[in-house]
Image 1 (cartoon, rainbow, N blue to C red):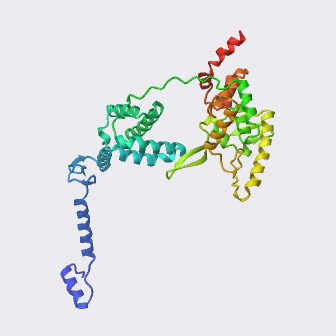
Image 2: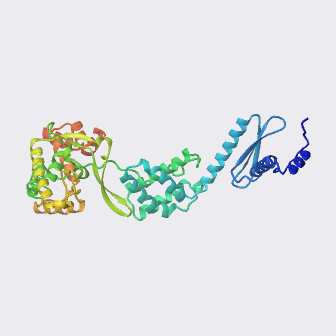
Image 3: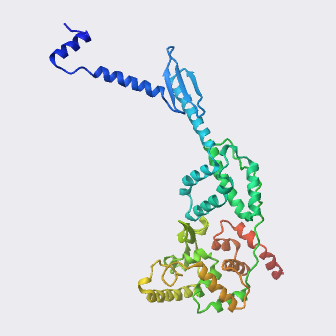
Length: 402
């Protein structure tokens, strides 16, 4: 006969010297613990329970402390409703952040998608302009007039129109991401009064053909001789010239492969020079080099070998066509000073090194080279950009043709 009386079982165990049965106690404690956890849920936590009539009831506590509930026919529907309310509560909490808190979090997540130089630009703009002026403004109180006043004040500092448009693009992108993440219902800087972009500035030939020859002759025998030669012959950007490597010189096909750029970026408060991808996708290009240009490059090879021999243990091999005396990339400031001295010695007006690119483009067009060829050599994304910048030269060519 099986005894089902728990009291008799316990008495029997005590007489036999056995330990009491704790399984029932453990089960009771577990149930109490579960009930306790359900009772003491925090803000923005919810629960789902069945009701006696077969439906399901969901509860959630909002950030305000208000507790709401809803009865739904099935458990999945109750779970979906609960998840929706919890998401809405989370979004409401995010929208109560300040713009500064949001921008710093957004930049941390977004920066991995940016080039290092762009990432540095964003970081400087956020900390120098956006956070001091708008960092304490609550995100969900922002509206267009706030940004109108912000941009007006920037112009008074003064900050250039191009820079203000760049600041606006960063803010617009960040706040549009907030809209996409349902933190905000609309982009508050949409339609703000940003300085209008002016028409593309037409560039007139900084140097004539005779002046270009005079500059090249004056540069002979100086460390910048071949650098200036390539700038005037190919229209390469300064950063592209500084980053050019010997492996990019395709001797057999007489081509130069432009596939990197040298940029100055900010790391831990210090400016650091590093190699990056070209400015745009079309800036990665191959251009034909004439025989005289190849001869100049061969002479440059000899100069680099001489520098390497003189530097000895101080040499840092980077395979650069235009290295410093120790093999590192050229310093832009030093090049600027040397370039200014050459211009002065040649009796020419002062122009930027970048203007040699414009000179090269103008000379090519004046010699009848098609716009599409010039555009590809310069690395423009489309020929229309080349026409916008240099198209006025065709009027001069037509006058000469007439």
